[in-house]
Structures are given as C-alpha cells and as structure tokens.
Length: 425
Image (cartoon, rainbow, N blue to C red; front, side, top):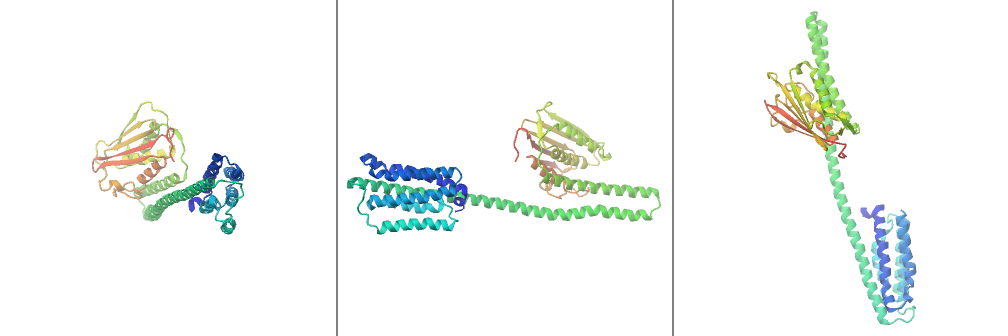
C-alpha cells in the first residue's frame, strides 16, 4: 500500500510491531513463571534481544536493516520454540500473523529480499509440518501446563493477527484519505491552471488590442500632422498623442503591477497608513480634472499601534481604489467628494473609501473584480485596476468588497491584516 510503502509508514509500523512482540514474548512466558518451570523460558533469551535490536536500529533510521533483522530473528525463534515444545504448544501459529505482517515490515519492493524471507518461512513451516515433534525435549512437563501454554500461544497469535489486520486497515484508511486529499488538491490545481490559462488567453488578446489601439491612434495623428500646417491644429494633435501615450503608460504600469505582485515575495514593513493615503491622494490631485474633488480622511484611533504589511502591495491596492474614486466622479456634480475612513486595530486595518460618483449597476457589481471587465465603457481604461487590487490584497491576506448604487456612488471596503501580529501563508 502507498502509505506502508513509505519509509515513515514502514518505520512507524515496525516500531509498534517490535513493542507488541516484546510484550507477547513476556506474556507467553507467564505460564512457565506461574508453574515455576523455567526450562521453556530459553526462547525469551534470543526473542527479547531481537525485538530490542530491531527497535534501536529502526529508531536510528536503519529501518530496512531493522525489518530484516526482526523478520529473520523472530522466524528462527518461532521455529525452535515450536520444535522444542511440540505441536501441542501451538507455537507454530505465530507464523500466521508473521506472514500477514512480513510484506509491510520490510521493503517489499526489493523482490529478492522478499523471496529470501518467504523461502525461509516456507522451509520452517514445511519442517514443522513433516517433523514428528509429538514429544518435547524440555524435560518433564505436566500435560496441563502444556495445554495452558498452547491456549496462551493461540490467544496471543490471534491477537497478533488482529494487530496486523488493524494496522493494515488503518493504513488503508490513511492512504484512502491521502488519495482523497490529493485528488482534491489536484482538482484545485487543475481549476487554478484552467483559470490561469483562460486569464492568459484573455490577457494576451486584451494586451495586444489595448496596446495597439493607442499606437494606431498615434500613427494616425502623426500622418495627419504631416499634412497640417496650422500650429493650433498641430498642438491639438500633440495633445491627443500625449493622451494616447499616457493611456498606454497607464496600461503598461498595470501589467507591471500585476507581474510584480505574482513574482515578488511579501515583505513586512512598518506602515503609516495616513502617510500612504496622503501620498496617493496628492498624486491623484496632480491631474487637473481631479482638482475640484474634496477628500476627507479620518483615522481611528488617532494614535494607532504599529501596523506592518507589504508597503508596495498596500500602495497598489490603495492607489487602484482611490484612483477609481477620482476617475468615476459625475461630471455634473457640484460638490464631488471622497470619504476615506480607516479603523486600525492590533490585528488588522479596515479602510472604507466612499464616493458620490457615477456608481455601479447592481448586475455589474459582482463582475467588477474580474480581469478586463469594465462596467463603464464611456471612459477609457484597461479593466485591470480592480482585478489587480483584489489579487494584490489577497497576497497579503487582505480582502476587498464593494457596495454601490448607480447614479449615487460607491463604497469599497479594504481589510488588511497586521503582519506584525498575524501569520499569512
């Protein structure tokens, strides 16, 4: 079986078997001790040391050698015990559990070694079968004592059979559980691979289309510029080309953010949340169209405990969410505003970003975190921002959720664990 075929499984079984065999040897000698007859205890002399030696070898990592020493040594002890005490002692019955457990005590992938052990067990069994051992040579022993020894040996041999059956059944259950877990993991990996392939196909198509679009626009404007002599028109062409280049640059930055998030290891750094938010908002204000947006920032508590996370990934998450809050404001709003509320606790930070922008339709809300999905096609964009934000938050153990009403505004909730207090795998 796969479980017992493993080195660790075989070593664990051998350790339990040597302990059980040691106990069985002691119990099988009890009738002699009770009757005060010490002559038959001779087989304890080699039997107990075999168990001890095999146990020590196994504990030292010499499991293969330990299994072979135990198999051959116990086989000899059973044989000479059966010969000495006659068939009425039932000592030969110990070969039954021994045969059951043998393949799992040694490395049965070694067929030559397995054949050697099967051969000497078969030889000893045949000798016991055809050898006339109706008498015993231990000296005078009352028939009643021999009968009790036979009963004890029968009970112990049955116990050992049950012991090995239990171990094999238990190992089978573990192997079955391991197979089920492996199948579940394999299915999950296949699903992830399938998802990755689908995203890759979509990614290649979208990248080729969205990168080529501004290039085609610039080429067209360049051709028009060659034929235009009016400086005012030339400046307009230049302005349009700059917009196309900025769009391309934004798209390339999204791709770089996605790539770095998947490749770079998570770093643990002390973060000032207020400082990070201020820096991103300042960057958003550099765009002329964002200058009229009023931003309110509230941090709770005012003097928070130290917060640790990956600075680069936190900046990606916050910048994507805050950029969207600025970008999707309603053009006819007299008082565009964004509310940023941060609640810091020893275990995590929860950041809520609320705006009074164009909002998101209810049927689109579940799809906004999908790669290349754009709920609003009236404004240009890559459709990667929110997807990258959620994937990046996930890498540092965080979550992002959203609620929205079309025409009223949206609210995004970001929860990021404090890596200084929690372990993220």
